[in-house]
Amino acid sequence: MAACLGSTCATRLLLLLPLLLLALPAVLQAQFTYTTNNGTITITKYTGPGGAVIIPETINGLPVTSVGDGAFASWSDPGVTSVTIPDSVTSIGNSSFEMCYSLSKVTIPTNLASIGAGAFYFCSHLTDVAIPQSTTNIGSEAFIGCASLRAIMVDALNSAYSSVDGVLLNKSQTKLIQYPGGKAASYTIPNSVTSIGERAFAVTSSLTNVTIVNSVTNIGDGAFDSCKNLKGVYFGGNAPGLGGSSVFTGDTSAIVYYLPGTTGWGTAFGGPPTALWFLPNPLILPSGPGFGVQSNAFGFIISWATNLPVVVEASTSLANPTWSPVSTNTLTSGSAYFSDPQWTNYPVRFYRLRSP
Image (cartoon, rainbow, N blue to C red):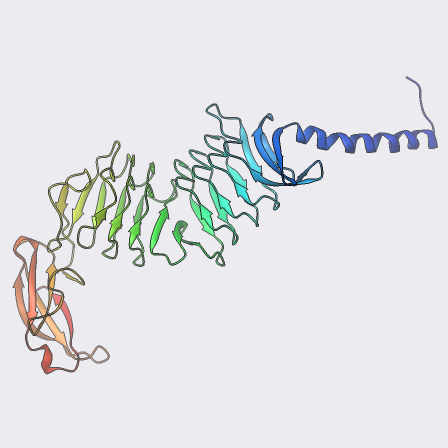
């Protein structure tokens, strides 16, 4: 092999370096097929070898603005372990990463506006997702079947969505949209939530117990579909409305527990059998029939356990309380109705319960 000396070697190296730099984009672009529309690029298919993938910000000088429907999806895992999506991308299409079983990390761009339906469907190794401020649309089942997903975090300035303890909710936190598939086994829904979205807990294999507070008035279709390890669903109020007939479909051995004194329950609810939920302490139900002023008396339902007595005490102050017994109630079938006809004799009156 001929040797080179001094400036001759330097000249050859300088000539070689631009050739290498020009070759790199060609190799990168060869991993994708794409379409051009109005001067922007949509990635339509990933054809690379897998591993860590970086989507380019531009191709042929045009900005990459979209990852198309099913672009990375594969029934046979394409072997992609991580994906970095550039800030030029504003849209991730439907089923774009569906069945990417090896995918454990995705970097979502700061300008992303939309995540399509089923975008990360059954990405079973995906562990964390961060939703930026710009995202205003997340399609249905976007994170269904993500068995390792511990948290869905949302930027605090996002106008459409929020996150409480890693659970995806709407901005006002009245609707629970998605419970991460790899989150802790027991969960209590926040008091602000009034509805549970369709398939919100579906295919969540880690979930064993969930407590649904009395503020929840509606549960969407398939909300607990295929929660195979779900054993107990505990309701703190009256039976909510069901958005469909398949709320608890799939292989589940769950039991629905409800408080004595609440209404709307039968021998089954949405599929699973029901049973009374006896609390360790007596409870004043803050809603339901008879709560509040009824026939010139203030009343409420006391719930606890069958055939046990409970004393109701009253006080006119919580700052310096003096509690006086008002009545003793025996909880037949686990509940009893208390009524205080003397409540109008006081400017304000507070109540508490105790065992005799």
